[in-house]
Image (cartoon, rainbow, N blue to C red; front, side):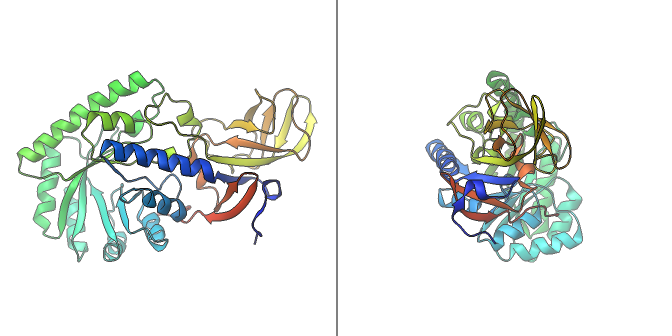
Length: 361
């Protein structure tokens, strides 16, 4: 067990480092934006998987939290989070039984995109459960694929007697990282037009749609501007990884708050040193990390194996030197660690567990 506080340089590497001040500024900036826009904020915990961070987001004004999986919601409920929306369908009897148990403990909602799933949910819960119609934005990952299917699903929800139509979920995941802002805005405007047509169909069929939830860090300002969403499911803004740093974002400015510290463990080849952070230390779906500190400007990272990575460039640091890198994709990188080392300046003041790390449905 580490004794806190301790100097950053004394934390064994690779280590997940969290800048407390930057995190708090990011949380406050998004909360202020949502309040100014008159839109509810429901951050997505798939980014941080941390009850400590979720509770800070709620204290800053968020109405609740999103989770991708039921096990994440169970873990965060254990950390004191009392209002959770599940953004993925829950479809098997055993997991629906757990859903029913959690629904008795906290304010819970879930999405559905199939009539059979609605019937299973209606038969499996013993208290009113809020259900959102999950609408496919065109990626065909989840969601009903037409306005007619949305109306059919809403009717199935109403027919159960135990489920309540809470609204519509619409998440344009493939649009979040379109780098050019104008191109991203045009794409979201087109998709929002489709969303409006589905909402019109539901209302025309006699259904109220209390909440329209979705959006993300790449599109939240555009979504707020277009005025259809009533709730934002932003996630990565709390950390600002390399993918989002590469995008031309609108709205308030966020800053990097999440880093991985590593140590030079070999320095025998001119123009290259080896560090102890490889495939097990970073997500690999979004390219390579960015070298932020401890090495000359222009140094670049390359994966070289499970345990190791390379820094390539001129004037590289020597054996035992500490370097700091920005993860390319924060969500799955966090899942590789069991805790955050919370930084206050150059001191680690405490550790926050990654409560929902690696949890299955």
